[in-house]
Amino acid sequence: MVKHRIGRVEQEIQKEVNDILLKRIRDPRVQGVTVTGVEMTGDLQQATIYYSILSEKASDVEKTQAGLDKAKGLIRKELGSRLTLYKVPELEFKQDQSIRYGEKIDRLIAKLHQDEADR
Image (cartoon, rainbow, N blue to C red; front, side):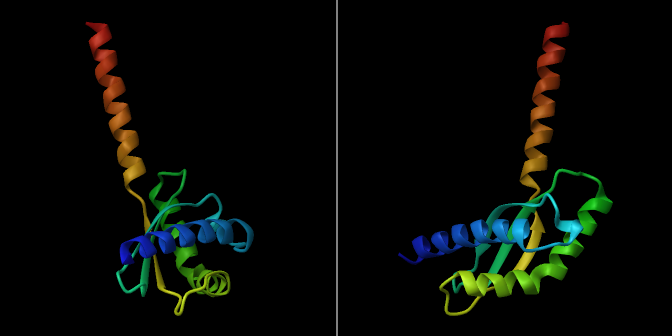
């Protein structure tokens, strides 16, 4: 039962944070950020929010991270008014590496197929 509740809260937070980033945050550094997942601690006190951006440049990643860290307070406040939680969790933003990893695997497979075709 508890795991089910955590999963529901994670989904809700993901949906709301995406919406907040889209409609409420005016910081250009967080334009184009997509929340890809949320992981909560069992006591619902902390939420790690995974995000992706289209750019792979390290400077863009740093700027985005800085923008999200700066917006954390406002995002938490917004979540407080949108969610029916006893206490809004502390938020931590982390770049989702799995998408980049998946793209790398796709490129390697494509290269294998190309090498195969060239033989």
